[in-house]
Image (cartoon, rainbow, N blue to C red; front, side, top):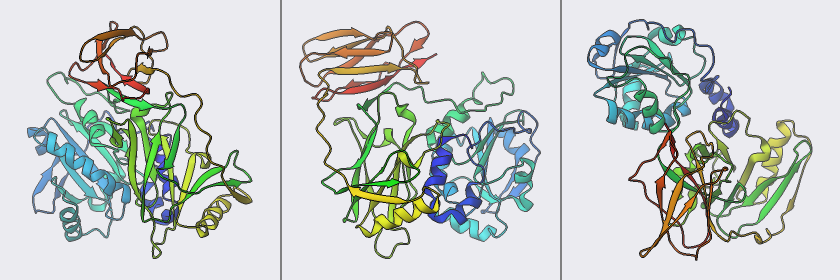
Length: 432
């Protein structure tokens, strides 16, 4: 339970806890003791929803690896990861065999077939009869996935839902290709090391885009008040602002109404430098009458606290619902007040600032970049903190990576442009 994402998922599903407690289990403990890793995985045969036979040993004769996913039809995190697994299957299906097996006794093969058709899954699905594989892995909670390498050994156990297709692909890539000559256990999925830039801000913030009334809710046992906004519309645009010290590629936006968790990088409009997404609000007939929202780091080890959580409500009646939630969780007495308008930012940037980091978010010095217009390029180099500062006139600059220190590389096809106004970015290069 070390992953911050797992803790955020538990936070965001508090109103349907009875169901998701069964589904989430002890998900996200990627580094827990899994004694079967590195050992031959037992051969098995199942019949999928199309009536075809899937046998592990046979699949390995024609594939470099096998990905086995254990799930259930009632499990929301299972549903959330299927599009990512499906996308990875479209890319790797010729090299990796995929099979998804329900561990739920009541999931008949007919029910699974209907489910598969409804959500548009391309790879085979079936049943883990008697939960034999689930029991062999000593799993607790769904979903879980295991990768079997070409030598028939279990080499990666993923406890919980994959959070992107890229995450699935980075896990699989470890075990593919001619260079993979002996079994290697993967405990943590490699981070994305592609070259990319992300706008950052003076402080982390999350708020609705518009003139909405803001409320501060203070609980007795919370160190600081939580922000709450009254949103009378059916939907609102949410703006996110990660800070320079955040691991921006790993930052996610989470909310309760639909159960979404989005990477900030997927919310980014690179032309404006704005992270935004549309957020639906509950209707009068909905069971959930407020929305919890938060920013969190998928790689963090600390809980997402209530201090990090904000709320969206339709009207003032929603304040009492939030107060009831906080009281039920042991935060004591709750009070609230309307917030004053935020003061204007008096420390606005007067330059273009770029923080150069590697895939582990460590600063990289001695990286040379050019700030280019149609007529000229001006070079700047990152200092010992990985920071590049360019205080030229405001304009849209084409930022080109020219050189990196030994042991680092970058995608030379990548292009970055500043916004017309001064701003701040994190630029990622790859530590080889």
